[in-house]
Amino acid sequence: MLDYEAFAAIGAGLGHGGIVAFDDTVDMARQARYAMKFCALESCGKCTPCRIGSTRGVELIDRIRGGQVEQVELLRSLCDTMTHGSLCAMGSMTPYPVLSALNHFPEDFA
Image 1 (tube, one colour):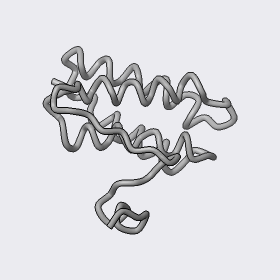
Image 2 (tube, rainbow, N blue to C red):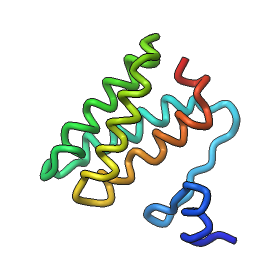
Image 3 (spheres, rainbow, N blue to C red):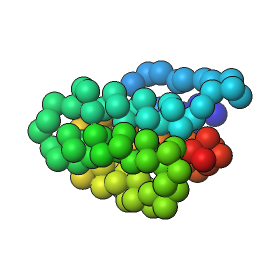
Image 4 (cartoon, rainbow, N blue to C red):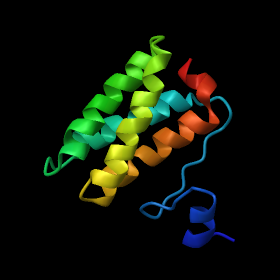
């Protein structure tokens, strides 16, 4: 079944009426970075977790992809702060694709 409750039960979510599908050639770390970068560019600036967190998220993903794998836990902590501390859905939902990529495609961050 494709509804909010079914998605929530597996840790997924439906955002603004869209589903994005990728084939197996897509670099999911790059897509995670894109999500953070989009948030950094589109943030209204009202709350710190979104305004600063998204910028730091891009930097952390770049460091991880550059070989600093110890930064993964810091990225996860940042995502938690954004999810629970942002004032709007954009800031609180930006971490979802990032965490999904980290959880399901860790090899793309290596």
